[in-house]
Length: 83
Image 1: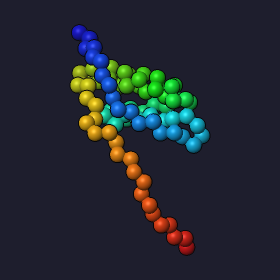
Image 2 (image 1 turned 120 degrees about the vertical axis):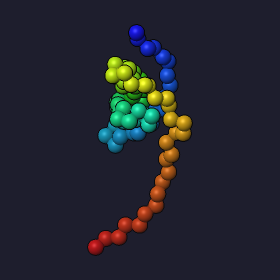
Image 3 (image 1 turned 90 degrees about the horizontal axis):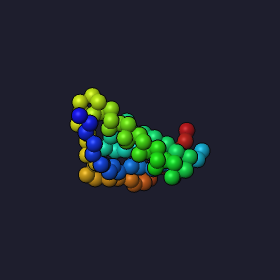
Image 4 (image 1 turned 180 degrees about the vertical axis):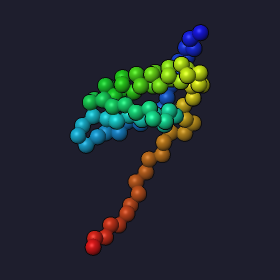
């Protein structure tokens, strides 16, 4: 029996220096995707999430829910000294 559920997951879009975006899904460890544009990155993330969850179901594992808290991003100041 196929288990079909509509899910929503928090994703993190990280702009890359060479262009494009890397996308991670905090609730799904190892679920990473990328895209050249934000729109493409969204589509690729959705595809990666779907594939990740389908693999879990195939292996008889539960599909995790979204993280309760979004990732925390902050800047940390450091002083770097040379030799």
